[in-house]
Image (cartoon, rainbow, N blue to C red; front, side):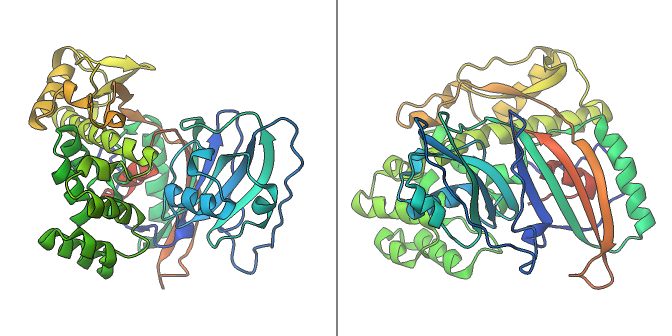
Length: 420
């Protein structure tokens, strides 16, 4: 991931902490028909939470049960696995519109093909709640959302209330004209930051390097048991031993290791042990990294004018759009095209690398993404004493982002630092 150290907003730095608590980051999905999946449970204190019972009405000829899924500190893939086991259905029967943050409270609409109503009614897992069941003829498909509504608490702020209000008020004005539409760090694997690096190796056909990077790369704050298991595997390449050492919650790694114990040289097969929807993310991460690098280079070169049209730009909805490379991609003309070609050459990638025969799910035709991000309906919801940081203040803001855009990108400009 590129180090994007240029900021386009001119407001002073707001010095605070993001995601200190899971409840500080609330994501509510808005579907294309306007339906909002509202957080109603985990954003309340234990005393405020009501015991809920859901009743699944008798279906007619519908095959999909739609449900609100609210979760806390659980990523979407893990939640799908838990629901799959709890309802005794294949994960392939569960549909959802988009991935949501792990370290957050999020609510999203899901669909389940022909579940047992009694199991749905009895489902109870810590950190996940299902509610509002409705039978439908339509499965929820990836991408079928308008966007997400965010309510975010920023803590540990030492600045005065007057200073906070001034910064946020001016930031809201500047944000209306548009922010750099970077992909957030979640796209690259959070703090481990490896998804794009693994993806690039896969696209270049370096399967062993890719899988070993995925299995062995550590980061400073990683749990010690998992970190040590990764370090040991990097030294020994003993898959059987690693299978015992990796903790139970490292499900993806254990699935890959289990395959490598049986087929020690089949690294492409080990990759295929990952869930299909997860495998697609590696190419997306490569594309996103290239997009970010082109945008960062553009800002470095053009400063405050970087989000405006430059020579050769291709437009989407009237805004310049940067390449997300694929096997059908075409470079922009002029200076815009030179920036795209330069970063692709720097990455030693060509469009044909995005068409793979051995792992076809990594293939991508490519597309373009607008470089301007608008945080719609940006509001200061309140400033209060921070109950978790003595003598400090907490700020609550809210805004809406269309699908495919990242709240951390907005926060990055507000706090003038990288957000993970």
